[in-house]
Image (cartoon, rainbow, N blue to C red; front, side, top):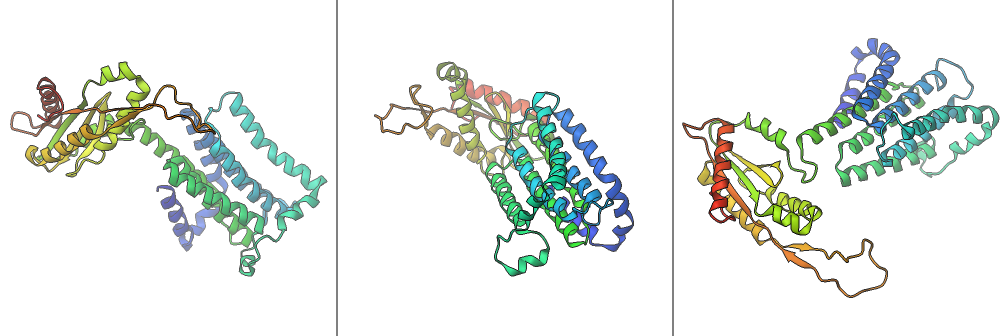
Length: 393
């Protein structure tokens, strides 16, 4: 989601007769609207991959609209253009997916734009000077008779199948919204190609693919704004939103890593970041319906909706002891960056551990607003520090 839902919604809407009157108008205007929005958002957020992916989808749509089967202009090469668009689109999307984000208004952006713009001219040259090369796109690769009924060459089926599997695997491994967007956008473009090849129509699915990519960028922006990039926990902005949704009965806990500044000074900020991630992974598993957040620095917050202090305390104590018992292994500075081909003597490693202090509070008559309870929990945390740390107050 949301790419899958958008695609399903488009399939349902276009399958009904009441959509027929405005589909023609949508085919004329929607591609340019999507292209404009994609480029504006790409410029604003410095996301060239978004802008160029939308450009690719709209170029494919317009090329087939004018020169493809049942296109506006009779080029006598309709099938070859359909096959070439179907071959180049997924390959270009893979290249954009694995390329590093380098912005648009610079040399890298211009190079990518020129690379995309050069492809239609290359196809045009081949069509009128080396048209025989396109016969290889009709080669029989998959010996399954029922595949022929779809009217799509085996080469395109193979390329789309492999590319969809690539995006699916990448999305499952990375769990990134933009990769999920690429997967659903490519699937939408495959539906569009099938509709055009079979004569049932469906060019509007190229625009749907562009919309999916744009939504995936907006989802990425949301994740960046509301989630902490280092630990993956919801960030301070998410906490502020969650505080407004609490009822009358809840507990707020503030957690702080003990002596974290000294730890950072001794072992370095890289190791400190690893410790933050380790502690965050434990906090993310807190029981009792607790919702964890990174408050900032080495401080974390856990909200227990519907639970009193006494009900939340066992879960906080279990969390505190689990972090205290966890051992963190420091790698030696002499450890090579790459795994050596020959076995060497084991390099000494050092196990260290960290502890956390916890302060919790619940609403009372004098302090019944969430921000007041949060400040009370922070005062309780300060008392836990004064009591010797590694305790809950």
